[in-house]
Every structure is written in structure tokens, then in C-alpha cells.
Length: 183
Image (cartoon, rainbow, N blue to C red):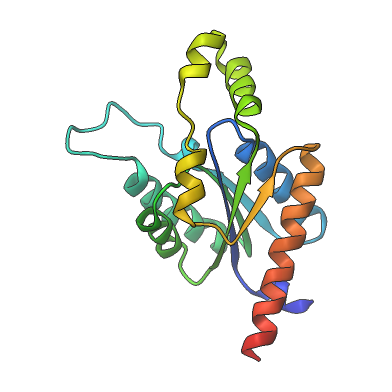
């Protein structure tokens, strides 16, 4: 198990808005820290509060990737070996850009899923929007289901600590399997 303490690893939690990426990511990061692994947490929305964007921008991904690269450099210099990232990523190019921003770090991607009505209810509570507005709001879940960006899909249909534990177990198990194959 000492390999986990010396290898830099990143977990990117993606999914539709309202699926619980940030909440679950916080708990995964806390569980890592409680187990003695030095970990940091980044919410991609939090590192891209900027606007209005210039007219030529098509997304905030490039800004997020650049900011993530700087944060990861600083976290790693401070001793972090694990990085948990939560955010919406909907294309292979964007996923690859985030992987490139994480120098010398193995990236594992989890897509959280939940029923559309659950997502709508979470967004409604968060934003105070009317049921009609939320029902008409498209979710990214359909797009993400066809994008194939993830290593695993995890349903977020139980208490957050249970979902976080499932993700952490799959992440570390996947890393151990890949390490055994390369030995």
C-alpha cells in the first residue's frame, strides 16, 4: 500500500448539474485525509468565476485547465499526492486538457448519475426556480452518457458518505489493478 502514498493521483468527478459532484467530492477528499493521505479538493466552478467572457470564448474549460495546473503545482509542492476535482466536463478534448494540466498525475474519471427528477429537484432547491423552469431545463446527463469520458459510472442514489466510499474504493482498486498489470 505504500505505492498509494508516493504516487500522485487525481480523481475527476463529472456529471450533470445537480447530480452531487461537489458534495461527493468534498467527502472523498475528507476520507482520503482521514486515512492519512494528503489530499486537496478543487471545484472547477470555483476556479472559473470570471465574466462576462470575451466574445470568442466557447467555454470556460481553458481557463479552468490553466487555473487547475497552477493549483496542482502548488498543492503538490505543499505535499499533496491526491487531488479530487469536481466539475462538468462534456467532451474528450476537455477531459484530455484537464489530464494535461495535471503534470505527473494519474487521472481517474467517475461520472455520477441520478434520475432526472432528482437532479431537477436539487437544482430547484438550490436556485429557488419554479418547477416549470426546471422541468424545461436540459441536463447534460444524456450528452455525458454518450461521451464515454469516465472510467466508471456511480449512481448517487444513497447517502453521500456511501457514494463517496464507493468511489474511493473503485478508484484505489483500479489503480492497484493497473499497477499489477504493469509490473
